[in-house]
Picture 1: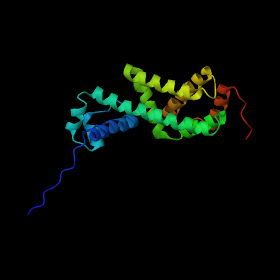
Picture 2: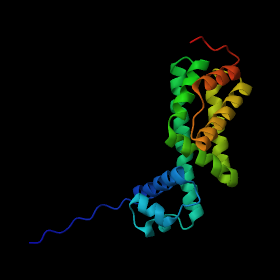
Picture 3: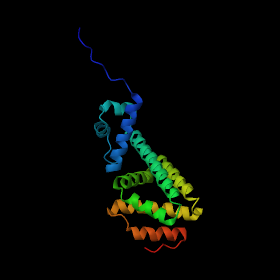
Picture 4: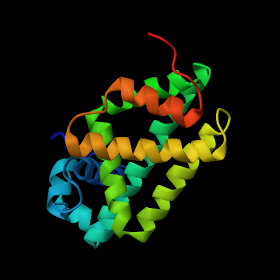
Length: 189
């Protein structure tokens, strides 16, 4: 009696998710210009035909990867604002979270790739607007709307600055700016 080789169970949803995640990772590492079905398939460890089966156009594949990045941005914001709330929502808590964020080069690059894609793609632009609105809403318990929008704009500027200059902002400058946005005085030390 010969033993039949068992086939792995088909998992179309899992395969599609792996393709979307691979596209997101490549976009975060290299931007959208080099994204191809072949590179995504290799990165995901799936046959090339799988990428074209789920995403017939490169634009669809790119948008799926960017949607994953948008979800990651929202999850990152949720974590950041949860930690800020746990620390009492002070300007120092906001500044500490920004400094920690800037130290995560992978996250900064992913966020910058997402923002850059939003410049040219209206569908991604809406995802970006949603992420900004979410961040503003999270700030509102600790500052007014004008301050919250200024904080989000500052966060975007820090993201681009860290990505383009390969050098995150000085923590003392971040602390100064956040205190200025919130209208508070930095503590000594």
